[in-house]
Length: 551
View (cartoon, rainbow, N blue to C red):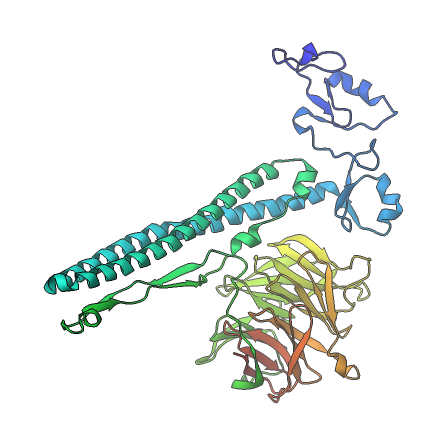
């Protein structure tokens, strides 16, 4: 061992042995004092990266060019690269970004996951875990009460019914044991998940402060796994039903314990991604449940605030909240006095809308309108509030020739742009034809592009999953998609205005059926309530039809 590096000695410059050198060469792995930095950089035969000592290890060497450092990141290959790599055939036509931006972006993901774990998921698991001892106490109390009742009733029948008493107590103990076994397993599972979440939080805290690009970029979020909360046990505890004594039918008449009932059901609350709902199959014949005459001109889109309240957007500057029982209950006028291009309801119940004239995305809170996003060179059309609270905006360029794109925002901050596929080909048409946008339960992003007569579906990362251009059997007919929505089964519903019908697909783009029997006339706007009842806004009749298509 070099005596200069022994535990008893302080750190020294590797060139002049000056004590406590403040600088470090991340390429050569040398400690340097400020006076020796220039001398070290004069070695032109190789590349150097001088950083403060506390920032050492933040540079990644290129695996293909050992003398180079990775300053860029290839989005297609999802790896750090150096400048020399950009000219290689392997990365030809790929998109490169500065590695610092990737690090910052990934830190946002880490911070978001950490915040969700600390503020929502972990406390909810703790809440569920704390309820189990209460269930155990209730079990013990209930069992003691039943045992006492059985004993008192048995004393009246003396020794002739002792065998019956023992049998019933044995049954009760067996039920208790079974329930305790289930509760203990349930508690162990929750504690295991709590342990995993605690470890994940600790790992995220380390990663957030880490400059190791390899470790940070390799991070894989487990939040989706943690969002699915453990099932809630619903137990019907046994009860004792005493009978009048009968010496000839003593065993039957003494009484019996009801069966122990243990049911596992999902929680009626969600964190981020909702729990899997009960299966709802498609009806053979969809039916109109209700027709709402709006008396408005040219009804364009609808959006459910609740099962009873829906927002209705017409081709005017007024956004109206309509109650199915009481009629109109609220009206909001856009700030620009122009028609909103699209609107959506956030998880907290606020209304988002896009305004082409002012190039803004706005939010309505308690009748107050706040501008969240202002665009430059782009015009917003479709808008969607995601399950994570982000905002997705479909937009087109001023010149109407540049291909449209979808941008994800966290608040007012752009965090993702989706415009091209892996081969650099545009995903969407130009000229404002990308109108409506929504997010599926599997986090896919769906956009109706009536300029391309298609629905374009990409995954959460922005990679193309599929394009739907109508049912193959109707290739001679035009497919003119307007609004789009998704139900609790991740089925995709698309308004085909020119053909007066609704297309229903599964989440992978496979055609399931049409809704074409409800007298639809130019259906444009679509939304679903919590029971998967479909609301359809008809442009021709200015009606909103409530349709039941699944059961």
